[in-house]
Image (tube, rainbow, N blue to C red):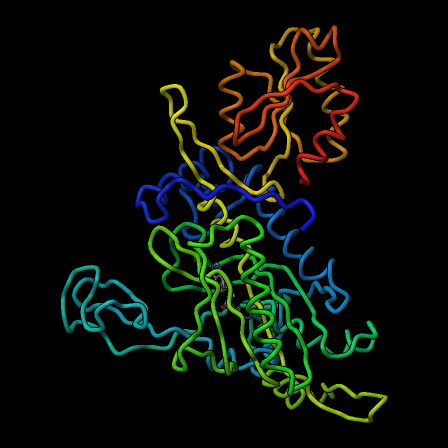
Length: 450
Ligand code: GAP
């Protein structure tokens, strides 16, 4: 709970259709997210995270790592490779099963995922009924070649999930970390899927980041740990300020389950287009370890030296999307309010997620204010990401910081030269307080962690 400070719920109506547009515009305008290869006309469905967005994304990932690894004694980390040989995907079932059913409309040529059609027989692009081709099963994995020969012997895949890295390293981690079930292996990293219908900004893209943890448990404890992780993961979002009424846990029906899972629940967020998935928590049983043991010949089991028991652990997997979650936090935090006949846009982000924690703002560009401003910046930078801005009127600069969710602005004015104090302005209340420079780090530490 260190650093937690509950934030007020967004005043924007969650499914206000303008919210999506406003957040996308803000993201582009303020440097959260840019269209990839923008100067070449943009590369569809891939995005680059700009100076502010990269900080938000890092903070989401850091909070996940802190909760899932740092604050636990039973989870260790991993950073596995993205390029993976086909044998891994053969064993995991991805080569055979990681497909989407694809149909083409004979009338207008539009291509759709059959399982996502509102009306199974009607083309949403042209309205024609009965015009679809037979469904083809399209594998979502990106294939490439390792080395100079582009032949089938050199084929490798970009991983479509980070999870398999944890399974194929199970024995390595077990032998080197002195852990025993129940224990987990956690990883954050990029995954790639050749999605047929990417869209909704960074919600569904072909290149994205995942935050996944495989928790290996004695088989008899699997149900209990499944419930534990469903609760724990839901709480993580709420603790970081996600409003209760925009977050839910939804159990999968049996026909929705993946080929490896006996139970799955999704953490869903109320996006402007409706409820949609942020994370899946799955009971993967012993499927993956068994398949990799069979295919590789390695022994992937736990041997309890005390009891002499040998067993293949079952796996509970909380699998979240970092990029998608960052977008959900942006949407939940976006707010507008009337202040003195003007509309103030403010991102009411939890302090831990805010890209910059503090902005240092000299009241004017006059030379005598620059030295004390640099002194203040130098005091704060070792502790927090800080912004520095000396252009435009101070009111406009406050608004620019509100828009990107900066919790505190520190203004250096001409009185500072006499009293060595600065004005600290808080984002949500806009209240201001005079604080001595000598006590500034202690003051902000208290406010950013209370
Ligand atoms: N290892 C299990 C697994 O990968 P998943 O539900 O396919 O499960 C987990 O993916 C999470 O990864 C999703 O809940 C979502 O947040 C994120 N994710 C999946 N595909 C994505 C995509 N195309 N774009 C952005 N995020 C995606």
